[in-house]
Amino acid sequence: MDRSNGYEKISSFFMRGRGQAVSGIGSSSVRAWAKTLAAGSDVLDLGCGTGIPITKILIEEGLAVHGIDASPSLARTFHENFPNMPIACEPAEESSFFDRKFDHIIAWGLIFLLPEAAQIRVIEKAANALNKSGKFIFTSPAMAISWSDAMTDLPSRSLGAEKYREVISASGLFLIEEFEDEGENHYYNCFKI
Ligand SMILES: C[S@@+](CC[C@H](N)C(=O)[O-])C[C@H]1O[C@@H](n2cnc3c(N)ncnc32)[C@H](O)[C@@H]1O
Image (cartoon, rainbow, N blue to C red; front, side, top):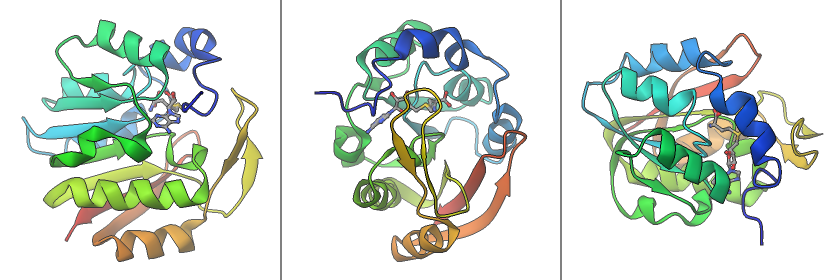
């Protein structure tokens, strides 16, 4: 059964595009976020794909990364790209990596792929897995909308900024800021209280 929300099926297409775009959309926003983190921090990359561009940027900024991705082909490519960074091929909703703590967590392009209850569960799990003052940044549109994912054609849905703010606060996180990148991806940048 596919737990990658259709990404395993289109993995070779993904790997030829986003999966090797070292300066892909969001790179400068993620780099700016990474520069606010202490060098040597442990960062969990949820829905890491091939690790390019997100994990690569984190490593370049002196961070140690663990990846989670539910697509076996993308997780394998992540391992080939970054053999020293642990990778778990499993759904974020059930990841064993949530049994331990991380300094910071990022989820770029993942949250809105999940059903509503799973989105809330992953935000709560990320909050629980963070060390105090740890940052969690994720992307999802500010508007509450549903659409078909451009790559997989499967349904995606945003709970909308108002609901995300509620979930963030109820999970023990403080919302530092929201902003958009050059691709109109909406970011929620939070820290653990
Ligand atoms: C839009 S891509 C983003 C990949 C990467 N973060 C990037 O910026 O290039 C979404 C990724 O989430 C992964 N994914 C989808 N559903 C998942 C789940 N339930 N748990 C973990 N990863 C998942 C997909 O396999 C894919 O690699």
